Amino acid sequence: PKNAEGEFVVGGIAEQAKQALDNLMKTLKEAGYGPENVIKVNVWLDDPRDFAIFNRVYSRYFTLEHAPARVTVQAHMMNDFKVEIDCVAWKAPR
Image 1 (cartoon, rainbow, N blue to C red):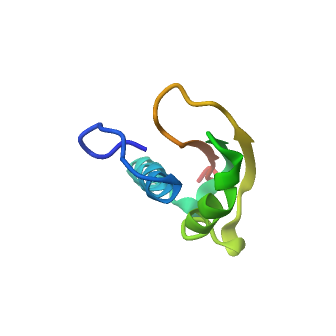
Image 2 (cartoon, one colour):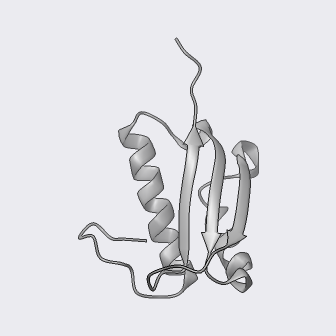
């Protein structure tokens, strides 16, 4: 959950999840992909009690119509951030 200046976003899980997902969407767009191309998302949460809040933020980016497979696990982060996200995206060859 780093901002454009490369600094970690201060705040709770909602703020950090939004920043991490904004960053993910920006990276996808730069590569010519969109959320509809994401087939799998991996999420690491520092505190599993944050899952419900994270899920509310996540659902703004990935709708039920284009819901990729997702794995969400607890992982103690090495820094003061609450979430880390990566994904796999795919497009059919033209």
